[in-house]
Length: 328
Ligand SMILES: Nc1ncnc2c1ncn2[C@@H]1O[C@H](COP(=O)(O)OP(=O)(O)O)[C@@H](O)[C@H]1O
Ligand SMILES: [Mg+2]
Image 1: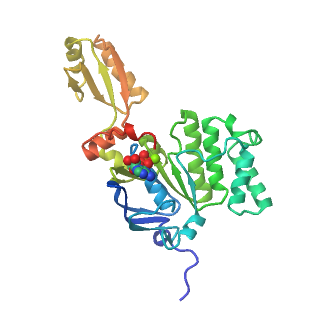
Image 2 (image 1 turned 135 degrees about the vertical axis):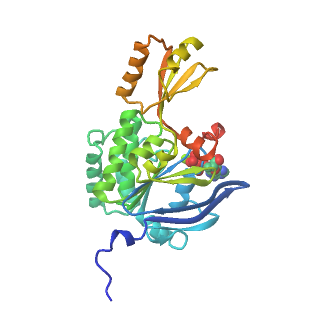
Image 3 (image 1 turned 90 degrees about the vertical axis):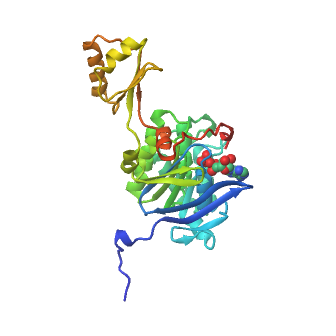
């Protein structure tokens, strides 16, 4: 029997699969049995707060560090027995930019091509193409030290792509970026999957980022996956957003409460929480009701669900306070 030339999608081996991954530092358990299956050509987001173990997971799956237990296949190769094969198939963009500030963007890319043993002419061709793709052509000959955070991240990703990886690990690709650069980065990431058919494993602290990008999301808490599913499946588990109205006194609060049936009234805080998707029409509707009833609110804030809501719902606690671990 001959193997079919085009394997049906459903039977294609996953790009990444892991079973029972464990890692401890001293007596601190960082990963406590992680199972993953990530189909080829998809975007997977590992969502968790600082210190949850995201970078550790990326480091293990990209062969930078060894797990203490469990097993994994990346690009069909065993992580420990075929580490070289895994390395040949992947690209890693770390949490902290790996670019050399004193070199130009072009020099950084050429250096990377050299490190990956890409032939000179081919390296030049790829560097030029990546600079064009990420709109860095004009800045190509400038030292990276003059770059904005967004440009630096783009260059960092471009460097990852020099080796033409089939699987790309992105550790917190947009942390610290301004909203506009974040959106650009999101577009680039989406385009990688659509245009190149690569598989992306990204980590993030932001629910909206996972929501925007990922086919599947797993939530990592204290070394365990506490939920896994599509963004919609996850959002069904967590409370929606709300509008929070603050009042000067109880009289005003009660006057307002009478007009919003589904709202939660907090007499201590003098606030009203009205379930809402935070859209302009619903905001306007709330303001109209207040106007019509001649009730005065001191302030209004819109709250969209975030990682804290996910954690409160899934784990019964907020995102762990890991301020002491911020440096990692
Ligand atoms: N090399 C190391 N030595 C000791 N502890 C570490 C080391 N690397 C990570 N840790 C600890 O492991 C936990 C998870 O870290 P990390 O994977 O970097 O989390 P995240 O990327 O989700 O913020 C943290 O408590 C961190 O302090
Ligand atoms: Mg990290």
